[in-house]
Image 1 (tube, rainbow, N blue to C red):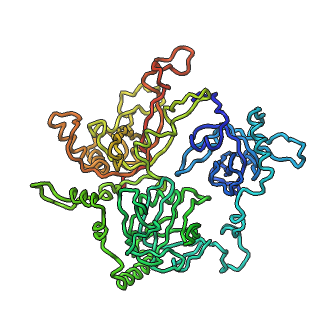
Image 2 (cartoon, rainbow, N blue to C red):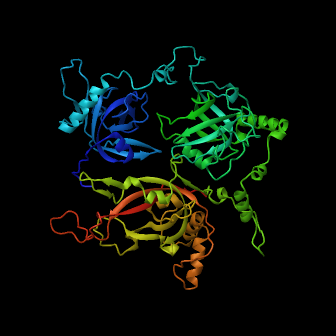
Image 3 (cartoon, rainbow, N blue to C red):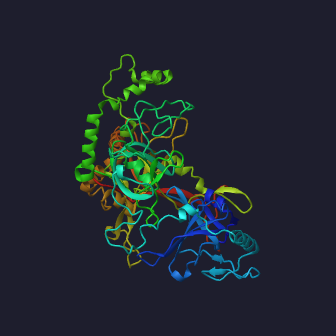
Length: 613
């Protein structure tokens, strides 16, 4: 993007749908109290803006903005009902949502328009961090929004406003008293509407398919009269806890309720980042501890349900923990209640096989076809489930576990790289400085020889490099590349995407835990490296080495690979394209010879990933 490029003024709905750098004007409908301060010099305020649907009674459909500055005095002093102009604001997708970010190292001009008690007066806007004058288009839209909010008393519904104060308000009562919605541990039998509690329960069902949230059904084997009454003898015609649909629009059949019968199970909606953690770490039958669970009533059927919202003070913290029963007294008590329940209700837990008896004929025929071995074929072992095949290697740890994983197909084809110029010409950025988290497997690597994974580089010296020929003035760096694929693979009919993932320098040291050396002169380090990397590529290196010994260099088909998929962090960046010609005198940047190239190539590198073995 050109340095002097100034994005046009866009609507907030457009900014939410197409992240990028924008000029934007909106009404401040919510301001997070206080100024957040980092351990360093950063200060930040958070507020939400809207330019439409100002009277719909909620603020979550607006654009949340985080404005960072080194100097607190440079932060925009926004208040609810203000109209604010933000120039060159970076709107990005984060944690399943969209966020406007004003980074502290960038100048993001702001102008605040505030209503004047005198209706005939139009005071000048408050501008910062440097004085400037909004143009005619910006001023016209800001004043129009200012007129609209003059008649709006509040942007939230009265029912929301009338709720008791949140738990962070200092209480003046005795230490053992509790506010109306203060967090505390509770059994499901004791939960009440409009409270925040901590729960320990067994996951009966989990539906992780939604991009922004996950739904799980939790029980601690205690009963509450305000919960839905589940029965294994019917298919739950209301759709609660069942797959498929009531009128059989979908081809798959509905599954019976496999949890405890009666009013013992609570539906819990997890928003990000809790949903991302649950997708990767929680399965049916696990016992989990949920923090800060909001208990409320369903608006349709009036039954109790629960939600775990994003933590506003720490949006990356996950309030979901998988509990080991032998380490938690509450989990042990849950196991005791579970055992007692199933001993006293043996007939209410029907085998899963009974579901298949009522399956549609086509489904049963397809099942028999897949289950029956071919003629002359022996069944050597039970089939491996997808969950087992796609389970991430526990010996490889990737940072930011609360960040949801994305497939390589989604990363490469990301719509966040598409932009539209002021002349209404659509184009794609050659790269964006984004970070991702993905589950992958290694299918090849380069260089083909493990000994070439470290390379010599000149060490900086004071004698101008005259002794670079001497090994004493050389150092070694890791520099290699992995060819990876997504796990699980894309659906049938969709092309499989492969990605070159570069690993070098300190990130390679973090991955392997070994400093780079001359591997040809250090066989012990070479063997340690081979053992470490075995955890991410299995027998791949062994097969390639055997193929080279047979005279086949970089074979295309090595046979069956035994590697296990793993989670890793991926950072996207750009390098100058190979089409550039030499720099001409007086030019700072060499030109590119390809018309359809913007001068940069997209690259991906591994970071914050380590082999813990």
